[in-house]
Image (cartoon, rainbow, N blue to C red; front, side, top):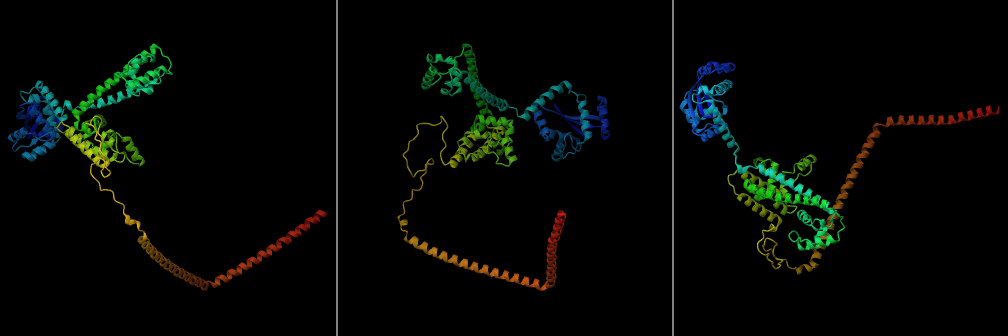
Length: 535
């Protein structure tokens, strides 16, 4: 029996010298307790050394998948003819047996034998010391880990997950700080909140102005429009706000600095997120945009996990609570989740939103798989799918989609109104029908309708007569049946009826006699009572 053993330096084949000891698996550990006893059990027959790290990685990767490499097949053909080979993997043994016609064995005794050989490996293979095995195994393990993970610095989607999470947190903090600035400065200048609605412009104006008395002397042209600036200066003169101290204004200005610094960092973070999304998921970015794509990746956990999901899951990703609530209460399930914020879905009408969301989710699933598993780094697939979706939306809506802001070129064309022209598609429709003057003559129509009415009335009368005759016949049959039943009863039970009548008459007589006796008794009792009272 031969034993196949894999090392970081190459493949080794050992000859088992004493096969009788394999019957007792528990005693094999004692056999390899010393190098001398190990040499009596196994002996090195052949060794195939790896030429470089790439060959070692290729061979080990094949072994992990359960298939032999080309070098291993040549090595086994040369050294294992007519022998039984003991292997560590049953799947590998089956493939070797099929392709190379070499009998393979895999059992508990083989695993214990491999464990013993591993413990005395440096003694059984001359020229391969422990100081050489450690760095070789470390380098090979790192190479194998990189191969498994398909490591690439450009494909790290963890940065996207962290960036979109921080972007959402920054939006919340910005809104909180901006509302605090409005409430705090509103005690001094309440009219400013209605004049300036943008939070960033409000913070810049407060930082520049300080006390509202200084508004008339300052120039706000770099921050505000001329109309807004004039309105601000007029309101500052007649403001109903309270007076504040210089210490209060210092803290308000520091809070405005915080708002402006957060807004500036948010803009930088958005640019970073946009560049990372165009690098890692260009097709998904072209289809749904940077923010929606990043939120989908963050919700899915990673781009690879998201690529494993079908289009129906991508469609409702982010609406899990609504989905399970609908399933529990047996209501309609949600039609979209995070994908609702995509620009293509936003351009659709209310009736067509579910259809477009379904189509967009299917195309997004294909784009995600192309980004995660494909080799091409361009966004051609995403752009092509977006054009298809826009064409489908155009066909559903029956009109052209509005262009995005800043994408229109040149001045809009002003065309003369034409009633026979479709709006949007540009095709001509059939001209309007002319008035039919022949429809004004009602004489023929009235005569025909009158004849039809007479015929209908006659038919109705005939139907009513037939129905009445049928009802009368049915009633006559029922009455005859009832009479026959009564006659049969009177013939069968005449004797039973007469004694019953006699008993009723007797009961009536007794009842009348009792009624007559009771008032007589009462009269006698009254008389006796009156006599006793007189005495």
